[in-house]
Image 1: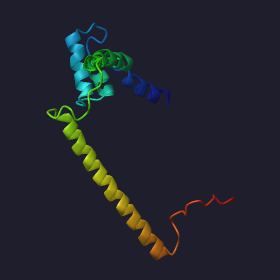
Image 2 (image 1 turned 60 degrees about the vertical axis):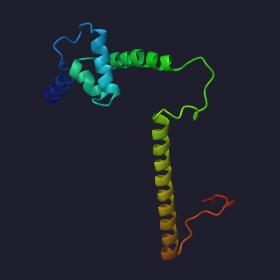
Image 3 (image 1 turned 120 degrees about the vertical axis):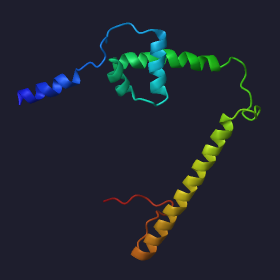
Image 4 (image 1 turned 45 degrees about the horizontal axis):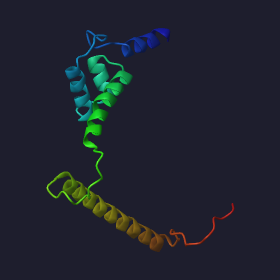
Length: 137
């Protein structure tokens, strides 16, 4: 039993990178963070691939990603959302939200139909009446 646990323990500590403790250049850090933020590789997989600690990678992500967000936020007064019609992301976001709303409405109508059919076939009340109090059992 002890031998079995040693095998599992040693496999977790395996470092893939040949130089796990070397200093990484800014370009290398940005490459790794880019891979993670774009979803090409997960945090755990990146840590395994490059021989990093998860907290180190998360710190890099904070230091690299957050200053970029600060650059886009300006101190000027916010402009109206529809003032800039040339930008594509609000149109994409509007289409995505419209699609999500249509799917939600379809799901709601399907669930309501299912409740009605169940009430008719099983002869039980599923919907709760407004203002009713919870029974004391």
